[in-house]
Image (cartoon, rainbow, N blue to C red):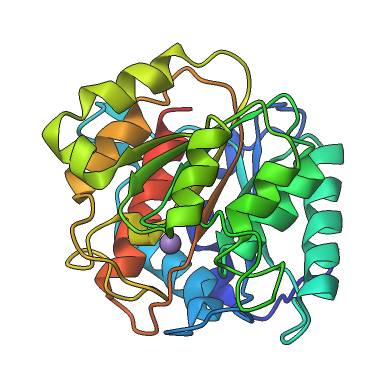
Length: 290
Ligand SMILES: [Mn+2]
């Protein structure tokens, strides 16, 4: 695997796992990697700093989750950052895919910190998601077939994931798309819940998640949150979810077989930035329900 090893912040999440809780033969163990690629971002760049700032933000939290009355108790290995190739998505995609494949070969469930949303496509390719439902949190559908002539872009990421024939795709928190994307979602039976629908009644999306059978892959673009809670993102879109709503929906994944989780589009560049704090918390919420 190709990893940087110099940065002590790379292993920040590992603080939540006591050494004796790490069981090498545990088939439910998680392997964390950073994928600091932001080469296709078109508005506010900087998600290459996501892995660093999200890990740093994780220092702020307790192992004990008061809401769930539960200690975080998973085997989690943080392998540091993948060496992405800025300016070359094709090569970057290959490196991410082969790294995730290596994690899977060693029975690690991948937790990936982006980077921008194309990272999710690279991970999905490694996972072979044909029998898997993709749960996609985002302000945007990301279902364009191309964006400014590019097939591989943050704006087409979920269309490329859809091309991999997942069992189902459910989009949560949507409030921005083109007319064509809207039609594509409807014609292809992609279920989507707008942020407005969730604000009216969160129970509908929770009911749908609880009814899913079979494996799930979760992709969380942090811009699903309102820019009040996540301003440091590539393409902010107002009228988003609150951290309370996101927390409730993540908690509804409890008991589901989640084969992988990614957090993308965090472009915080400073310690204590609220976007990275909400991102780190979402990863910890997810890990706590395992
Ligand atoms: Mn987005």
